[in-house]
Image (cartoon, rainbow, N blue to C red; front, top):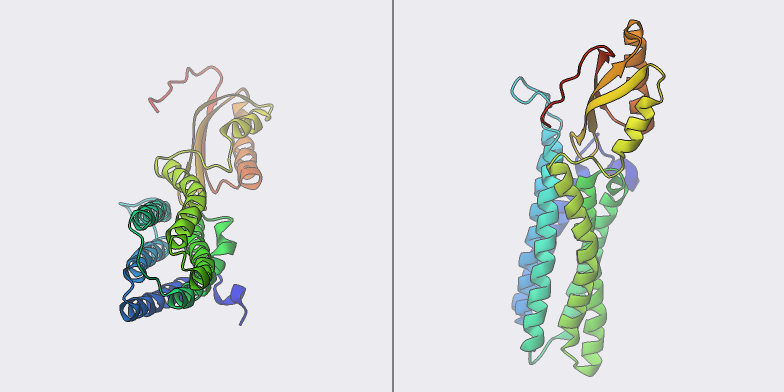
Length: 296
């Protein structure tokens, strides 16, 4: 069975089970190597990797909750749990990178007397493989789902840091320049931090009911006003129900109320096809009615 069918979203949660399992195994492996080599850095990195697994578990819980049917109390269901998961995961990632940078600075100020470069290389290579594979299985979904995008960047960041550590370990073996270990960690962490910050800002925007980045409110209004029957648009609200589903509500002022159903159907169908807005709620008003704008 190929990667796409095995991890296909909607039919199974294999990608989450797989990611959580192999990363837990890697944490155990890293702790054993750290204790055996007497390396505090490896043990610390294992603790950091626990944060990765926690983020993956949070995302997995959101994927399970999103499948629950709406209730009278949660009329939209639990779709927004994926937004909360993406935001939490992004927070964990940014915090983890900040910790990596801080620890690297501490090691710059107080370099270790001896670093077993070969053990570092072996563990880091394993980390590249595990984190790289985990990032790969979430890469396809990251193009359309912010929750999976957060997962992807989380593990891509770790894979890149591990790759830098591999090169540093090789150089340390031949030169004993132990200062390279924290330097490459800072370089990789800062590089990833820029993209991670964008993901965090995007997730925060969705948490606070911001218009999704792939939709322009001006373009939506321009499209609706292209209908000859629609004179004015009031109370437009566009927000994300989840990391993949978008909703809109608006009052449309029309000069031909007799065409009510046709206008409603055409506008709703157009919003879904042109802007990929799933949940459309439109209210038509006659031109002679004085609209009372809501507070929000």
